[in-house]
Image (tube, rainbow, N blue to C red):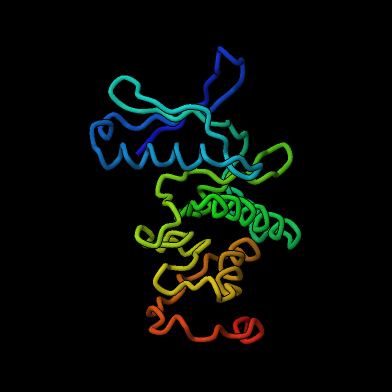
Length: 211
């Protein structure tokens, strides 16, 4: 969908990343809308674990996003090289990803595509940066069809809107997305469950949900 280039901002004299929508998608309203949604969603957020967005606009028949450049691999590359991660490092990665998601949720934005390729690991200090809000949506029940994570990805898999309830602990989901960091194996996708028929039912106790 897009190419990402390392570039230099000659006005502010800094290295940036420029994401350029491929020319064949520049005239497609659907792809352009997704690209614009990514820019707007991420630009609305200011958090140390989310990649900063600097600019967005048209260019030579297509569109660009200028963003913070992160020197380092993505989490998928780290896992291929280092999995299983030491316990403390795995906990630190999950903690920073969840902090980024919490910051987005506080601004009523759902990322919807959390996967290792969209988690950047800064080389100099190991800091985590969440990127690619291209399929993000506002936290509005009329628009949400996935909550938080993309259903196709077994790694870092999360809840679907149909069987997620804010009053239920997500211990199992958290353990599931943590597993590929602690082992060298990708987990199988979580089984799909039918939506709850009665949302007024009392939530289970945390101890029961975590068994």
